[in-house]
Length: 272
Ligand code: KIV
Image (cartoon, rainbow, N blue to C red; front, side, top):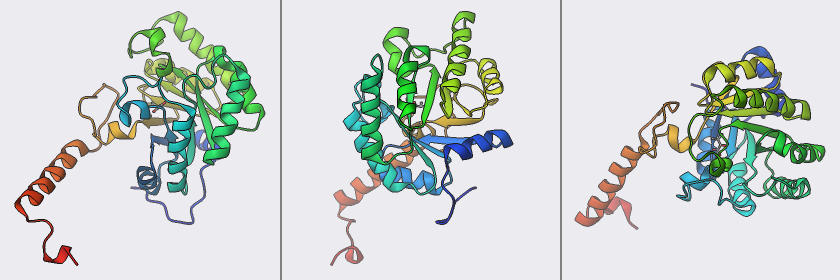
């Protein structure tokens, strides 16, 4: 188990490239608040993503589309305060970068200035390339995101596996190269066939981080609420649950309710 100490070196985009060269796998999880970010940083995670999946797991929405730049900034500031070692990546929310590269740049600059995060993530390939290049031109590192792109759910109509057909797979490979050539420091591949993800990881020199994309990529990312078992209604095949916090929390809260009702809490030592 890797638990880092206070003097440990920060993870940088450069260190991630070195890790890929050495064949050292990269670990990445989401976090949306100070406490969770502090815990997973101390446990030794390499990258913390302030994901717009907050829309689902923090806000109870059915898609990521409602998230705003203001909301992402609010969460990212809290996460950054809790992190000493990991690289902090922040999702650019739906509507803040698509279709208008000037708006992309001003959203990106605001997000970097106000949060002190390390870099941003954007969903899409060729369609958003101008925005990606413009954000990169300001010296802001960008992580790409291809395959299942939840901000495009209304185009797909479902969260099924992407790029199973040749045409979409070929476009994904082209897009991955476009993003690398533009200067992205890494790419997330979400819910695509493992063989396709392995091919992309082998062709690119930048790290490829998978979620539901098999093991032959350079690292893995999961939504922290999912891997901690905080929501047992969500159990896709790619998800490994490392705890059952829903059960632990339910039992703890029920125990507390019982102690309050019976007058067991607080006792003599728990009062002034
Ligand atoms: O928002 C998010 O949590 C993500 C991950 C699923 C990669 O984009």
